[in-house]
View 1 (cartoon, rainbow, N blue to C red):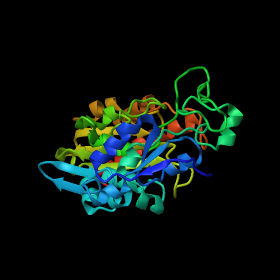
View 2: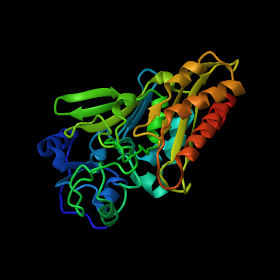
View 3: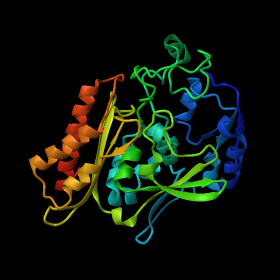
View 4: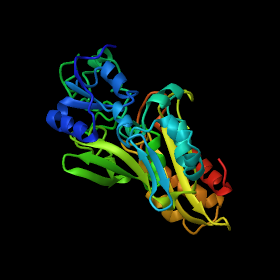
Length: 342
């Protein structure tokens, strides 16, 4: 489990980091908390020649700051730790779906090191991909390998999840993204041409290999949540093999705005770990707005969630079971949101 040779760069500013990334292109990789990147390097999934360590930028920029105002909403710097977010009284009060989702990520040690930016830029995961080089060599690699496999010596020719096609079905397995999707979040991204903003829903490409809309010369700097999303009821339910640490096998996030009569004024529902991207269930909001809670309505939305979810073969569970848990979690999250609890 040793890493290959690389040169370590520690930029002194965001502009410096962008310049380094632009200069080295596909040979460079960003590391912040390292909870995902370092294990991937140890597994020889990547072989960057330059590793750009941006953790120190938290001390010289706003990349770790968390700011809130009723006018401008919430801004979380990309280097804010997951522990800082889930333990924040502000997040717990105004954005409970985010606090609860982030609190399920890995274990306390990983949350202390991991950052919100890193969690939003996770690699997609697959039972055939996230293995040792020796294990991958026995299968001839897979489509997802972007660099020549250090052991097999070539990229794999097929997707082992769906051998009949040329599409990579590696699953998006982050927990923060679905919660932020229900909050209509957007991202700040720094690049050679300056800063740009992109809705989080457009950041993910639903492709196991080409997963996010982030250039090789760009750096995610912050996530923003509009003020109108503050105070919404919300929850997150997660299926995993070990509740103490594992990535999700399925996850459902719900946020709702409910009036005093129990009528839904607005709602958003998002899924994770059952597609190559975290996805909003678009029909759910249309079905819920203007409605009061009823078993029939909740069952209908749960069926809409199942139609959006496309889990394929993975370790730890079957696609049938994961779809069924999406249904169960959707029902639970909606019932809890209407009750106003968790």
